[in-house]
Length: 309
Length: 281
Image 1: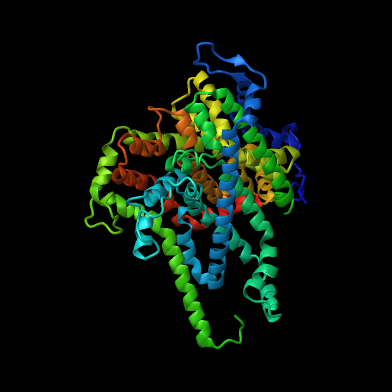
Image 2 (image 1 turned 30 degrees about the vertical axis):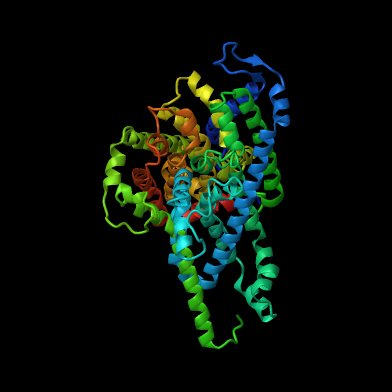
């Protein structure tokens, strides 16, 4: 099937270049540039991770073998940052999936005439995460944030200071996830809505005639059919959430008391604030390796791009 | 519900669903509207306690203040320069690569596609941190070129995926016909095949441009003053002057309006691009 469109043309041996060599020639520049721009930094990362000290230190950099990695695995701060990254990712993905599914079902129930609403709903797709983070920080600020003000006006809160979204260490990991959820629920809705549209209406109709309604219809018919779409959306969003940086940095800088410091922020701080490139490189290497393994397993088992036509 | 329910109840149910959907969309649109509304308030009202939703007085003062802050106008020029460069590099490389992948379906093409996906999933901090030293060594630190090269690691894999998908719609016969007419294969790609996917190429260019335009981590690590892009200028407006929310919301609005307007105008094409890039590959 993969070779379906690669029919050999009568001219394929023009100028002695075979199809596959010509394809290679077309692909090579992009491959070389990516290799240089990504491969080189990753190689340097690996080398840096084996050195201790900073170039700015009096003693300069020294080869330290696996010392940075040993420190890494015994460092409670790294473990905590790793755990926070995991919790943050789960919060973001679960919230987006729930909201995205609900909104997509709502639009689906309304039929084609929901077009205008769907268009408006897509608007945050291309807003910069930095702006989203800043905006929500503004809206969640303790004393003059509009969110608490509105919650007070409708009677949910007694006082606008009742919820300290960004300064309560127990709450902050949820609060910093809000801009991420706000930005990408559109994407989730979009994917699930597309998935819903590809379900044959007759299938739903016959299930309805069999008496399946509401939640049962959702659980037994719709969700199983949406599985592939949801799997892809979850992989993409999960990977992106685990890497989240801009939104969190701009909202809290990782605080209070490091309560929102995920791995990306911890690595950034180790590099820039504590000027410890060796540790930062070792952490990045491990983070990178874990992400690649997780992504590879997820892609191979759930997604398999290019396998189906 | 079942089709046997009476029409009045069905109509009521439908009206309620519409109401719910409108409420959801309004709530979802509120944050950005609030950004715009705040940017139009006088600077003191923007941080009033308790906050107001609608401005008591509409003024462009925040915009004037923001645009006159040091480095802000330069940051817009830097953002446009950097994003244009990153887009040009990505398209120049992704057009041949995407065609090579889709038209010939070789092993190398599949490896390239999978490699691009993996690169897209790499944590930016792992690439950005070593790039500080590398760009420093080749004197490209704090330059739009250096930043554009770094952002190419994001824009190029994205462009390859998108273009490889868009090229699927081109029948191989088009290339064959061009070859029969005496075109060389590169010539056929540029003047015959590319026009067929002009829409898809434009969408790819927009995606690449916005990927760079919205990028923050590389800009933070790899630029300081000279090549500072707008997201940095926005972030600095905040730290440098305390919580200077009025001008900050104005600058944030100026910076994100093009992205929002593009999304709404090109909705259909952007949706096609997103779902192609995400689902089909």
